[in-house]
Amino acid sequence: MLRFRRMKTLQKFASVHGSVHNHFNQDRHLINRDQYKARRLAAFAEWKSLAS
Image (cartoon, rainbow, N blue to C red):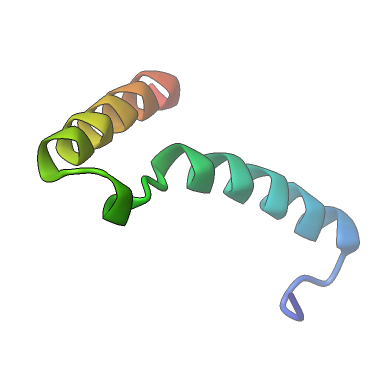
């Protein structure tokens, strides 16, 4: 937090980071391996379509 010189920059980073983190964070300990891999593939496919 101290690396951000302006509050506006910090807020911008936090809002983007929150969206991306929630998109890729998959509570691995709650699901089995096959479901985890399927969800990760879906998340990366969606990310790839959004980024391009």
